[in-house]
Image (tube, rainbow, N blue to C red; front, side):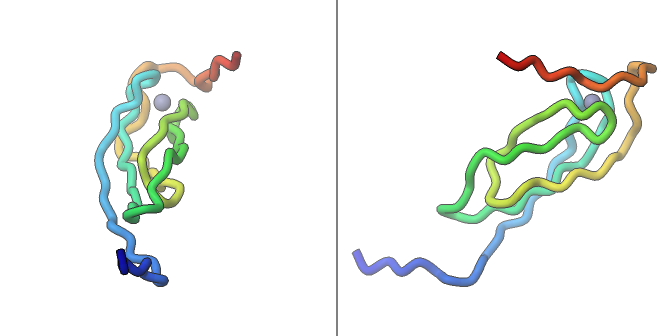
Length: 81
Ligand SMILES: [Zn+2]
């Protein structure tokens, strides 16, 4: 096919705002995507730690925009099976 893979990283940056389904905090998620290298990457709510996944090449960065709105201090408990 003759389609060479570019050796240097060529990340596509994108971001979006997420509202945590558990605690109501709002935070920005910054993704670095790269064609052919995207995978399921984990990130967590900066307030309660609830885990989410995004399709990206690198681990997403998160920046808190608004604190949690549920008035609690607890951490999200991941249910492990
Ligand atoms: Zn949260």
